Every structure is written in structure tokens, then in C-alpha cells.
Amino acid sequence: MKKILVTGGSGYIGTHTIVDLIENGFDVISIDDNSRSTVYGMNGVEKILGKKIKNYKVDLKNFDETRAVFQENTDVVGVIHFAAYKAVGESVQFPLMYFENNLFSLINLLKCVKEFNVPHFVFSSSCTVYGNPDAIPVTELSAIKKAESPYGATKQMGEVMLQDFSKVENVSSILLRYFNPVGAHPSSLIGELPLGKPMNLVPAITQTAIGKIPKMFVWGHDYPTRDGSCIRDYIHVCDIAHAHTLALEYLINKKNKTKCDVFNLGTGDGVTVLEAIKMFEEVSGVKLNYELGPRRDGDVIAIYANNDAAVNELGWKIKYGIKEMMDTAWKWELRIKQEEALMTQKADLN
Ligand code: WQD
Image (tube, rainbow, N blue to C red; front, side):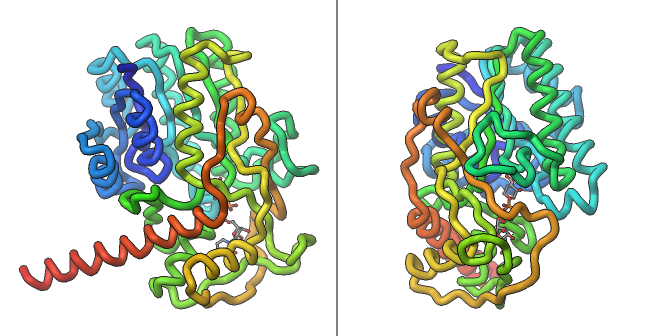
């Protein structure tokens, strides 16, 4: 079996991708220092797969520790790099922390990829690299405008580093630009576990619906869109995960057109914040307590993908619609509540 090294393997997209890779015949190891995730994620992966996944609890900013993982696994044929800080608002407050973490980690990884001749590299990028697009839907050739945040800037710089590195080294890379990953695995054993107050829309919706948050705000209702709220391209995390498996197979089978191909991962459908909330209410049967609030700094008004390249070249077929995104997200939130109740009961008994 071909062995893949996944960084950030305990995280939201990392866990779902490990499940998809294993189910498609790959062997997987993970590097995750659990600074932004918990072992809960990997426990869920192991319950779904019925097998243990080796995770190296290593900070990628530590070159020697990172190199030791490659030294111990010289049969790795591909790296999928998820591990990065990704909170837009936090990045505005702490830019240096974001540049140090997201870029030093990538540089250390690429040094190891070079030294150990790893032939394939998949980079977790984001539609954030487009900034506020001039025209939508965006294609992979749409202008890369000034990043709206240091987080977005680290994704833009990461892409440039990979393009230049792949040009001169024996590695073929792929940049996957996710739109808005949402939802959870149908088993409800893995999903998004935001640390602290959720910044992203769908966790904010489900945590409000379950009562963890008393009320949520719709940030901006006077935008030039069909209902005044922002438009985004929500994409199910399982569809995102499977695109990584397809991207690796595309590279392994030498289908790539350049040393660093780029793909948008979105449904191609734009959904407003208010439409997403309405869909959630229909699916869950829960009336959401929200208030129309002011615009949020750094928000893009509207963006959604042209995904023809991923569909036609990777053979990507989207399985989940907005209804399943909301349904699986809600079922995941319900399961977390159940687990928390169980843990409280156990604590009371001890
Ligand atoms: C979506 C819309 C908010 C919360 C960011 C990153 C992107 C990716 C996903 C990493 C916006 C509105 C949100 C709330 C709201 N990150 N909203 N009330 O900002 O499009 O994308 O997260 O992979 O790279 O840029 O996602 O979910 O934060 O916001 O009204 O409580 O929902 O204003 O219009 P975003 P988001």
C-alpha cells in the first residue's frame, strides 16, 4: 500500500481525509501537535476504520523532530499538508504568529520532501487567495488579489513557495483551493470541533440551535446580494476529503499538466447566509435565534467556484448538497452534546 503523510491529521479536514484515503487503499501516518485539535478527532477516525492511525505529536516548526518522522518513514510517497492556523480574525490580531507558524512549518516540510525524495505534495489552500473577486464564479485563472487577512496572505505565499519549489525539485504538487468546508461524516463520529467561540457560520448555527450560544448574529444584511447577506460556496467536508484522494491518484498516475496544478473545490452554487440559516431550520426543525447585525471586517461580499477543472480532470463528483451539509452538521452537534452528557455523568459517578 502507498504510504501518505498527513499533517494536521487530527483536524477537521484531516480526519475526514484520512478516512477517505484508507477506504481507498492508502496507508496513512499523521503529524499533529494537537495545538488546535484534540485526540478526540483521531479516536473517531479509528472507530470508523476499526484500525489505529499512527500520529506523531510533533510541532512542524521544529525541523529536527519533523525530519525524524521522515527518517522513520522513508517509504512515504506523498504528503498532504493541512496543519496551519486558520482563524481569519485571529490572524489580523496576531500576524507574526500566523506567518511564523504557517510558513516555517511549510518550509521545514519542503526541506524534508527534498531530502527524502518524496514525489508528491498536496497543499491545503483556500478561496481566500482570490480576495474580493471582480467576477464570479471564480476559476483557477481568476486574479489573485490582495489578501483580506494575514491568514489569506499565508495561503497565497504558501502557493508561491510550492510553485517555485516544484519547478526545480523532483516533486509534483497540487494546490487545492477549498471554498467553505462544512458538515460532518455521516457516522457522526468525526466533525468540526471549533476551539472556543465558533467564528465560522455553520458551527455558529449548530451551537446556537443546541443552546451553547444564546443567540447568533448575521454579520451584514445590506450587501448588494439577493437578500442582503453574503454569498458563499458551502462544500461538504467529505467531498473535500475525497478530492484529496483523487488529487494523489492524479499525481501518482502522472496525469498532472504542470509541476503544480491548481483546483477549486466548491459546488459552484452560491448560498446566502440567510438561505443557509433557512435550510438549517427546515432540516433540523429548530427555529434559530439570530439577529441581523453589522458587517464583519474582512468579509468578502460574494464568492463561489467554477469547479470544472476538478470535475473534468480529477474526476471529482460532488455527493452532498446543502441539505446534507446542514443535516450532518446538526447530527454531529447532537452527538457532541450526548458525549458531553455521558462524560458529566461519569465525572459525577467518580
Ligand atoms: C461565512 C459567512 C460571515 C459567522 C473563512 C476562511 C476560509 C475558510 C472558512 C479555512 C460570512 C457569516 C459567520 C456568524 C455570520 N477557513 N457569518 N455569523 O469567512 O467565508 O471563510 O472560513 O479553511 O478560508 O476565509 O467563513 O463561515 O466565517 O463566514 O453571519 O456567526 O457567514 O459574515 O458572510 P468565511 P465563515
